[in-house]
Structure formats: structure tokens, C-alpha cells
Image 1 (cartoon, rainbow, N blue to C red):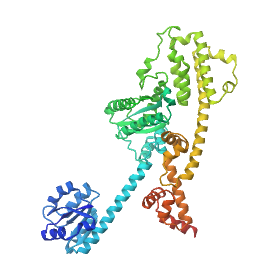
Image 2 (image 1 turned 120 degrees about the vertical axis):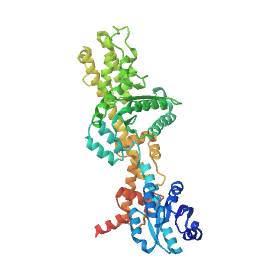
Image 3 (image 1 turned 135 degrees about the horizontal axis):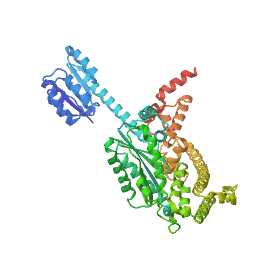
Length: 543
């Protein structure tokens, strides 16, 4: 029921309205009354009625003054003004303030009934629209939303001017104004020994992702977004003097979440250096991306900082007595070939070579290192289905001799090998992703009109987790799953509006909406006109 409050200084009128109107019959609850605005205001603030009925002329605080305050404090309240014929100028002012309606004295029961029903209908309509908007925003507010991902990507790669950043942020309803900024990158992956755990591991993996999102979405100073399938970024914004505290809170909570049971997750978090200008964020990203590449060289160091680079073997290690076999271990190269990104290759190679310090000066060690790298890359390429001849089409003993000449030659050789193999890996991955998306699109085409159709159904159809499917879909299609499905439904709806005489309710059911009113809301939100208006325009253009 809607709550109604009455303010009237004439006790006979007030009591008559209170006692003689069947409020419940009109779906109202009479919650309070007062003789003037001064007494009414604290009661209204406490009770928060949906509807206020108030006289204009009253002692102490009149209805006009009361209305001015309430439209500011309680913008959703509906105000009905009671006035006499000689109060018309006051009534006009009240309407300009934003009151809903006014009634002339003496008030008849039928006039009040009509007004109450009209106000109730308006309130219910506004609430339905608000519910539809919330539902629509919840569906569309996907933190893998391509437009959102692309926005942050353009910020950190320097593709937007400061003016363009603010313009795009406004379009996306992202508050990006602050006096200090920083970037945190979070990389999550299943532990190698747990990868064969089947669907249970995928569920565990997604649970950690959801916990991270759930935490950071609570705070406006953390703007979290997906960077790629395994990495999230957080643009940290706030007062410049608060940035150190915000970063500390951010990294400590990532650590807290990722160390929750049941485990089975490798995680890494990297924070940059705070800046005071949006234009400096590309430099912050370059440093963070460089630090993140060291997760392969320091696999047990989960929070990576510039100080952590000092943990790498230094020049104090002489000869081959300390080769840092974990760095020469083929598994390290294999892991980078599996998970490393093209943009990380140069940083990884530099860190890898530097980590070997004095040992790489030995000719015998360089021979061993090149052979180890070759065997690792060949083994990885064979898993992808490529032979050694395909990987090294122009291989010869000369190229091997050239590679072991010195540090610079080994660096160039390793760069070339990793670039070549990762290009093959990404080619294979793209082909698999395209095949998966092709199957998913066919499934969507067959099922998008079903009322209960959802992302997890499409993910099951292509035998991957919903989280993984969502990330790959938005990356390949440049829209999220729900955006794509909604567009499909709207295109079908427009066709039916043009080519048939079916009602909006019938069309809603055919394109997957149980609620015809919600269908109309989504149609107007996405097509900028109602279904009725679209049909009318289509008919006019056909003439």
C-alpha cells in the first residue's frame, strides 16, 4: 500500500478527510496528520510517505514552504495541494515547484478519489519503470563489457587524450575524477598440478574471481575491469595523499581472498607508482606490465614490486657453481610459452638473461642454455601439432654457433624463438576460439528466443565454463553475450513489427520476454522509440 500524510489547519476538514475516505479501498494507508507545515515536517521525514495532501494557507509554515523543502529532500514524494479559489496564484507557484495536482475547496469525495487513483497509477508506473531500468542495468552491467574493457585499454595504451577520457567516461557513467591515480593488475591461474581436476577446479577458479569482483565493486575508488581472460585491472583513484593506503588495502585484500581455502590457485598482484595526471597512466601501465612479466621468474612471489627484482640472482654468483637451475629448468620456458603474452616477451627475455648473471658468461653454460631452450620450444610446438622442421625451417649448425657467441646473441635468439612459438600458439588458440564461437552463435540462433535462455546454457553447449566463455565471447565479438542476445531479440522484434499485425505482448513472447512491459522498456531503451512508434514509422516509410 502507498502511505499518505495529511496537513490541514482546519480540524473539521482534516478529520473529515481522515475519517471519511476509504483509504485502503484505494490501496492507501493513512499514516499521519498535522495542523501545519512546521509540525508536519519532522513527522514526514520520519514516516517518508508516498503521497502528501496539504493545504496552502496555514500558520507557522504554509504548504508552499513545506512543498519546497520536500521536493528537495524526498524527490519521489507526490504532493496534492488543497486550495481555495482565491489561492490560485499560490497553487500556480506550487505547480511550478513540482507538486503533482491541486484540489479546490470544498473537496468532494469523487474528486479526491479520482486524484488518488491517478496519483497511485503514476507512482506504480514510475516504480515499474525503475524496476525495469534496474533489471536492464543489471543485465547489461557486465564487468567484461567490451565497451568498458576497451575504454580502460585505450586509457592505459595512450589512445585517448584527457578530454576524450572524460567524454567517454561520461558516456559509460564512470566517475574518473580524482587527484591521484594508480594501476593494479591481478593475474589468476589454476595451479599446474590442479589443472587436471576437471570441472571442480573451474568452479573453484571462478569462485575466487567472483570474490575479487564482489569485494572491489563495493568501493568507488576501485574501478575494476577485465584486461584479458586471466587478468583483471584496477584503476585506483582518490586523493593523492591516500594512494599508498588505497594500494595497500587493495593488495592485502587480493592476498586475503586468494589465500582462502580450498586453494589450487596461482595469483599475482602488481601495483604501479601513483601519478596525479590521467595522461601519465600509460607510463604506469608500462611499468606494471614489466613487473608482471617477472611472475614467471619469481613464481613464489605473489605481490610483485620493483624491490622484488632485487631477489633475482646477482653478479656476486661466480661461474657455474650456482646456475639457478630453476631458471634453466625447461618447465619455466614451457610455462611462459603457455601463459606469456606477446607484449611480455621482451621483458621476460631481459629478466631471464639478467637472472643468470655471471653464469651466462661461460661458453659451456651458453651451449647448455641454448640446447635447453631449443628442446623446450620444440616440445611445446609438438604439443601444438608442429614438427621440428616446421618450427626451424632454416635451421643449421651456423645459427646455433651464432646464438652462443655472447649474451646479446642469446638474447636475440631467445626473443626470436619465443615470438615464433607464441605466434603459433596464438594462431592455434584463435582458431579454437573461432570454432567455439561459431558453434556458440549457431546455438544462440536456435535458442535466443527462449525465455530462460542464459549465458551458462551457451557455455555448456561449447563445453567450457561460463566465465571463460563470457571472456572469449566479448573478446571475439566485441560485445558481451547479453548485448548480443538483446540485439538479436530486438532485430526479430522489429521484423515482426514491420511484417505482422501481432501485438507487443505476442511479439514479446516470441523473442524471449515473459513481461510485455519489460520488452517495451528494453525496445525503447535500445531502439530509442516504443514498439508502437517503430511500427507507425515503418508503415509511413512504406507508403
